[in-house]
Image (tube, rainbow, N blue to C red):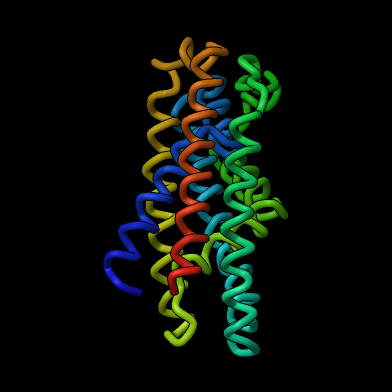
Length: 210
């Protein structure tokens, strides 16, 4: 993996992770309901879940690489179109300004409980596994060591997730009113969707050039 490829991966990770998705909503919900400590506990669980999900996806990628380089390339193209699909879906997604709250009973649990729930929600999400399976091949080289590439991609994704999710947890209290504004939520969805559509289209074009 070249340094330029890694930088592209890093920038796309930031684009994807800064968009308020299910795990961000989970973290922000805990921050609003229970405070920073509980939310940061959830962040730890989410990060561990991301690492496990990427590792599980990597097992399939390693088998695919060993079996067929052509199939691996096809998967990259499928992944590119999948990114475009996700972008369109995000662009058209309805907003829910009341979706950040958590039940009062859960608000009394400790940060460890939040970490466990954050991990379970993340690692058992089949859409997350499918996303990593489609996303990671865009930045891997078929004839390079798989384990080394996966280690770099995993560490980068988890590191960016730690920054973005912790940022949401810490700032949730001060941006509460804006996060509940439907116009702001709709704008975030469309900007994020546009970035994802562009990333998928660029990836597909690069594959044809290769």
